Image (cartoon, rainbow, N blue to C red):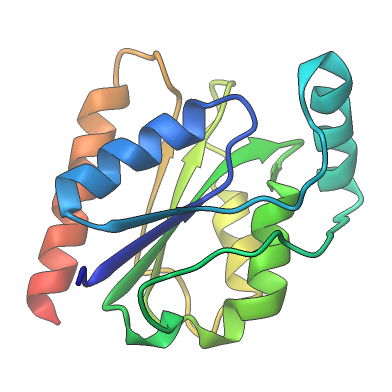
Length: 162
């Protein structure tokens, strides 16, 4: 069993690819989250932004992890940034489970130049403890691989410290 759980939501596939890479590098369990809302195409893109701005959430579709959340040494949440906020399904997860997360890290994917660091603080409002590590990645950018790999190394150091 893995000591690390990577949970993510991905509308376009960018966050999925990023979390697959991170999970593979860490030997982590990988679980996709979804709330069943259709966010495909340009209407879905618009709906995603509106859901984020309104902080709207819906119940998540059923998902399974190998063990209870609090039994992992580290839980990494992957989310796209929508309108300066985390994705609605990730907010749903945090509202339901955040108080169970004491060892958490965040991997944001974004389209713009800004790092969207305020999203970390927004997500921390739902968790039992502040995030232990974080990264803001822009898929396809020159620094993407460097910062992704840096994040993986930080996660490994965090796990070594126990």
